[in-house]
Length: 460
Image 1 (cartoon, helix red, strand yellow):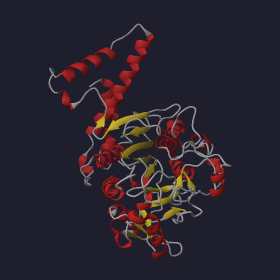
Image 2 (tube, rainbow, N blue to C red):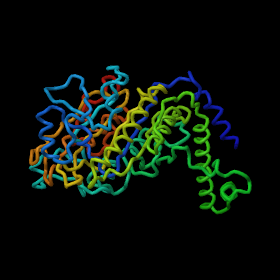
Image 3 (cartoon, rainbow, N blue to C red):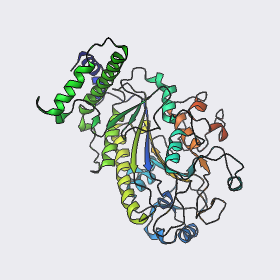
């Protein structure tokens, strides 16, 4: 191990010990991207008899029976509207109603009918095309980009909103040993800034030239990696070659530093059981990385996780049921792990997806639509509530812009992201850089929030 790495580890070792303390000004923002377009109107469902009857008529053969819904109880519900969750979401039911039956530990909320918009839009304006609309609506690749950039009209220079947030917040972590934005799901647009980049890891830790699989000195992998390391540690007269070697060596040193911290994590601190599947193991690694943020010198940190396969044009009921069970187990274990590690009050987790899906069945599934339901959870969240405006699910209603129940979003992604960014520490002055369209939806100089899903006192 080189001397620089030894010094870094020595300086940070105390932060990993039980009782070392979790600083109050360390915050993590976790994005869970459900790639493919999750049918979220079979995830959050009306439970009062009148609205469930409308839902059942519109959904026809894809409707979840009222008797099968998991009951959730809103804190201070408005009117007689009731909601239930898909039968596979037992853990999220507990997070919404209160962990362990504790009303004070309501950790989950929903934001209904959220989607990409350039400015507030009515059904009449949409049909007449008298206002600017997001580019290539209902296209997977375009809508994924727009959720990750929060610039639905497209960008000439691609950068994600978490990347731009890192651009303006980078100075608060000037002792950082890694990038502020850490991905457990490969490269993504969400975390790329104009001056900052993402740091890609796996559920096993860093990407490194040194791996346990190398084994003995005669192992071909070890020979190859040792050769590469030897090349980048040499001095070159050519400036381009020397720059490449220095940058590559610096990256590998950081990867090795991260991996050492990750491997040295005290597993006695984390006893929460996680399901044995790929997504849950991503979340287990994320919990460890959040706990290690102080050792990594990160006062602010975003994490990106991904779960694909939600494009259910066919076999919606069977396939989504299994996938929601996987998501439920992973999210529930993750939140309980954050509680155990003492970082639940400084972490917000939210879901995103390409788009919602049509209310009307195509026979065995649903098709690409627009507005959908998102989840947001964590200690800073007013859990146990449904925010936004749940749409009228009757076909041809004022919320339906056509094609069998494509709902016009009543909450923009900018409003959804704005609140978590204010909590995260992005100033009013910097908000237009991070969210260029936010001024179309909310007065950033206002003392209020557009959705109000944050607990009072958790933002300034």
